Image (tube, rainbow, N blue to C red; front, top):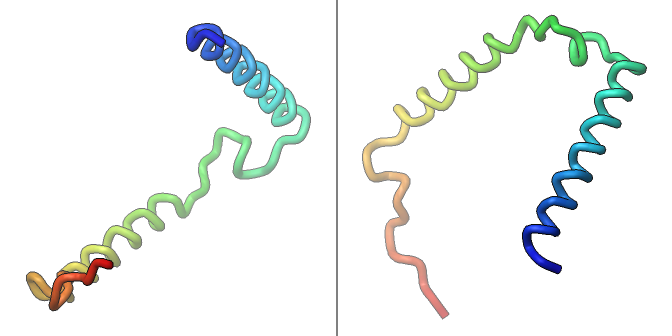
Length: 74
């Protein structure tokens, strides 16, 4: 099959699936997910996660994440 034809068929099928998903969401809304209101703790989660990553990076001294010796190859 020609790549352009395959891509066009894939695009049509994905549009159909998106339309079906949108229809399903309209008929079965989930509170807090399918409504316009975002979860109130999203910002807090992001800030906490980034703070934990930053703290973890500060705990590692420079170069300690590298292995002590090179890995053996077969």
